[in-house]
Image 1 (tube, one colour):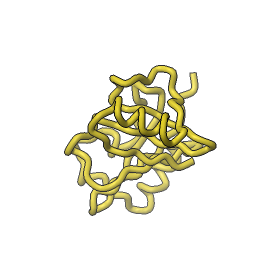
Image 2: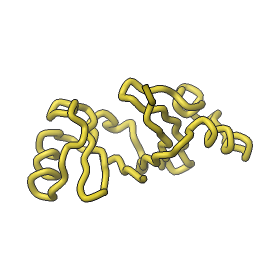
Image 3: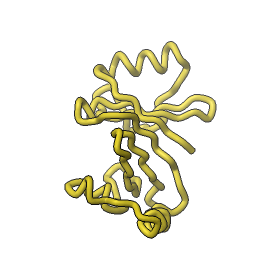
Image 4: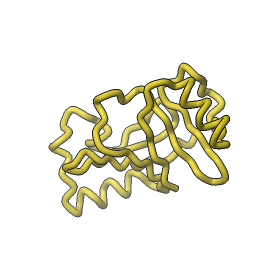
Length: 123
């Protein structure tokens, strides 16, 4: 599954646009108009909207849901994935358990486009 992340400036307006005009629905019961990130879905399509990235995010962001982020990260490292460009970002250094219930790692290309590989944390 691929999940794009769109930067937005006004969460309540964006929620209205996506849910009332475009027929998306909020898919995470914990999301609300004050959330910095909201998950949306429609007929098998998924996307996230966020106010949290502000001007810190350049390029595009896409989430890829995978079965095993640890194995995938190890494979990319073996192939030469260079993590030195984002030394201050733990999630670029290897898979990290996030507070929102996902284990993730990020890969950002030279133009600022980021692929975020993630899987749910099983409890």
